[in-house]
Length: 181
Length: 363
Image (cartoon, rainbow over all chains, first blue to last red; front, side):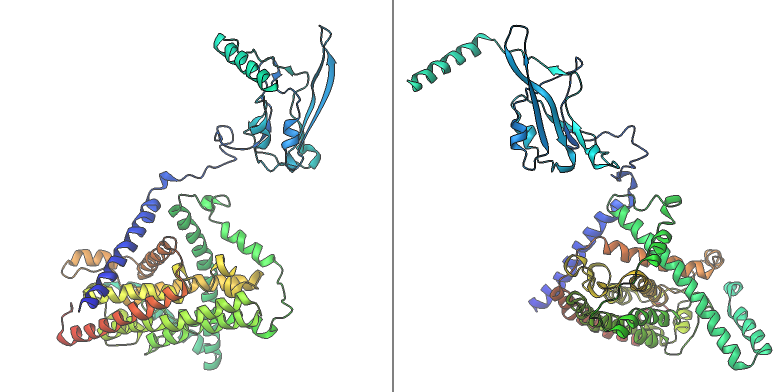
């Protein structure tokens, strides 16, 4: 007798749970205001991508056409499929020092897998994700881009010279010396 | 009755008379058959296109998307564009396939649904044939489709196709029982197997109202079992695109694939039309016994509109649960049929026979 009761109880609970599912989808059906689809080419002007969106690797430049890339080449070493080429050149500054600066930072979008290793490992935060995603071109060579703009210079990062920082640095220098000895 | 203004019997009879007066009876019959065939072909093409569009739109809204919206207003011409694409595609011949059966299979599936649609009354006097065992005929003919599916799976010489076809066979053999028994329950109520007779018996109220609880149970069982029989919705194991690529029609391409596709949607329409005819009063308008003025207003809505409206409602329910529930496993599918639907159905039939015997339904 109990098994028969359980049998019917099972059927009714199954019906109730099925109806619960159908109520959820039915409510979506009746509320077209919740539609998340964006009509892309029409809303192209006001389209805003999300912060986490990985469009392409870019090098942000400030208003003085300055970037933060020192041309160290760490991004090139870390790139797993060789889509970054850093070409640096040596210049002599006014005070007679020889300095290595970036000549061309070349980025092959056609080979990039968007793994983010270059951006994560950049010691001077010179690279960032760009939001541009309309990459379709008629020629593959157009996918090779130079990230540093023409005539751009290195932004001199102002060193943080607070006294607390200085003492920490001095201490660590001391420790280093001691271990070296 | 006032809905005699929408009676098509005189129209069809006058066409029949005119043909018989000018031609020999054999030729008149052949021409009538050709006319009916052409009308159904047109109907198939238009309805198939519309149902595919409706399915994509409903699925999209349920998933908070927009669905087709580029080709034509509201994307209405999207399926026409798809059809043109399918027509222009290459028909790929499989080297190891059994050529004759491989080419024959889509036609068997389509022919089965063609034969079933012939018995469905769209309005008074608007049906191709009115057999006195109409329900029996529909049940016999609609299960022919599985022969086409089995042939398609076997002749493609592909493991996916064969697994899909065998699943479809197991599924239809099981669920045919439930479909048959739930239709039988209304046969007990109305006392006739003739489809026009079943529709006539619902002139005062539909069976789902007159037959109250047992009829509603039979209706629910019919909905579930017939969805399984058309290989749709949560029961689409025969296709199972995530496991079997496309099941029995994996190897088909171009217009032969389109035939299977069209047959699936037409089978859905036929099943919904049978549910409408048997449970929801067919082309009969909605009547409330006693409210005369309300009933006359309802009578002025054409029966074709009533029929199509009710069918569309059932098709919507079928699409609704297709896009809600996940696909069943084969053991769950068979368990549902043999352990739940069939015993319930048998008890229900007994209850209905008792209810009819005692006269405990509205009449």
